[in-house]
Length: 207
Image (cartoon, rainbow, N blue to C red):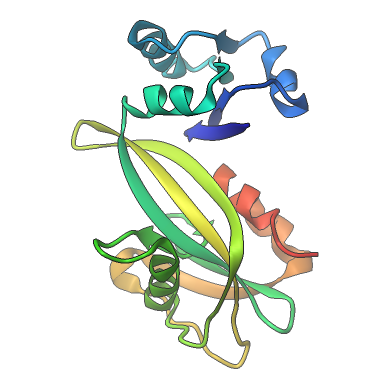
């Protein structure tokens, strides 16, 4: 088992086994491997991540749940949810926010389920109301700083069905300045102007 946490575009893997993907990162000269989950070891990794030459981190422990708990203690966890929306014309809905193409998502409100959050955020950010919720597509992790705190955002992405006839409306108060239905075969252009985590979610589009 493993999860991948992005610090900018640099991944840190938490794992209890070394699969082919992780094995490839391990052999990079600027990757860091640690097999301890005490505070000094994790703090050392956090320090190394800030260096420009840092490529990737691998943190291994035989008990995955213990590893995850120990690592997550260093962050304030924020839960969010959003949608990977496709219509009957095989078009994918993308939003443009803060200079990047993105997918609609937002933070979990108190008292709501993660699925309810995903649908609510899609409706608020895109204006689409006729949304059919599907299965989970992916869970992504990325970090950022806010008011001096280390934030770890865990985002749950769901497959959703939309309707091409419904005109999307960007939620400008959330910094969304454009919104488009993009044909699947033209997504590569937009992937060049998005986040690494969003690329990974787009790769989960149903065949």
